[in-house]
Image 1 (cartoon, helix red, strand yellow):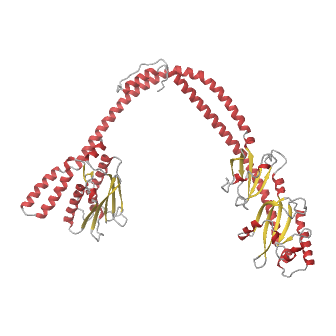
Image 2 (image 1 turned 135 degrees about the vertical axis):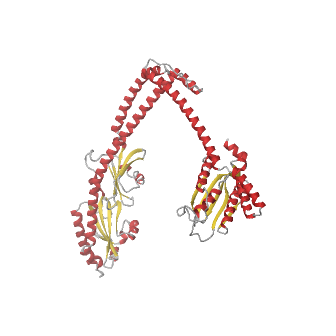
Length: 597
């Protein structure tokens, strides 16, 4: 192991510690400022986007209102609901009248490039082709047929940006967003569609101003519908070629509220800012290059690094001086600690001429005395605790005198021919003999079951046919060892508290055991009143210490097994009380002694 001298070690630790905290403070400042600038910029841009979204809602609402007014207009109804088949002249006249009427909308609202009405009422004239600027077109001319399936669920929809094939200038094909509205007859059946084309460039002029401050040259806007489908992409001059690449980042928006998040597109970092979905479920998403956002942050970072470098250079002489001053009393303290490690708490150090170190030495001397006092006090308390626990547990179950007395009573009853008393006394004597168990704390489960059975037989003799005791034990488990006298107190508790006047059927207590891995589970169930309805005394009860015995069981299990046991007392499923004990499975007393040591 590498050995270090105290002074260079302290010097290195101080330099590294100060450098670490300096670096940590620089990074914390940088990231805090970055977060502040990002949030400030994002909040400002979200305000701008919200303003743009209001303009967008107004524009889209205008478009939808135009389509609705056309679909419900008298001329449209007469045109599509009239069942008479017009001749060619009437058809051409209808085309001219409708075209002139629809053109008034494009004149009034220049952001509308064209309007079409699609219907199959005049399909017989499709063979003549387009005559002038046809506004009434057959269904087969619909350019957005792949979106027609959406009309199964809705009566109107917006079509993403595409070229306007029916623009008045055949040489130009502007990009438009189309709003399509179903036209219904009086029976509610669809008889046609009206399509209003919104010039996408009008939205660009609406959202992008001429100044860099209000409309940065590196921004891009994406218009999404309620399903997250890209409806339109508008980009400033710098990002025009990346408009398709931005679509992959849109999938990261998974919440309806507004927000922002960093993203990487085509190897460059961008900040994606998005608004909340509006009432008509439209959303604006903006992409800004982060290099412009973090320009001021990088300047602050460089200033912090410069300050940190200067401070770091000053750390070296300061650390050298402090390390030299600190180590002067350290050897004395080390010798004092070595004496304490060796058990000598009488180590006492002399005064030092430096006030701070003198206080440190005084504290060391006081600590040594306090440690000696606390250790002596703790050892004394532990001895008292162990002695008291053993005395209390021994005094709680000490049936030697009772066993000898019962043996004398048994002989006297047998000599006088009173067999019933002799049997009961024999059982009680056997019960006490098991409880003695040679002074051991663990006995076999077979003996513990015999102890509980003897107590139950004594109670059955006293109560005649009012009490039934049952056992359901795997014979292979009877050879394992358990703490003694852990069943009888619970059986006594069932008789004392569980059975009352309302008990019509026989009082019944059953004991079963099963192995669970390295543990054994013992269950005691009665058919009494249960925990909430137990009475303080049962008619079957004469006298006893059931509550005292149960507390004794908990204390002994805690003393013998520590935390390696489980004791749960609860109401049974039907009625009565269920006691569940999970104990370690011990095959021999040697195993118990080995674990105890």
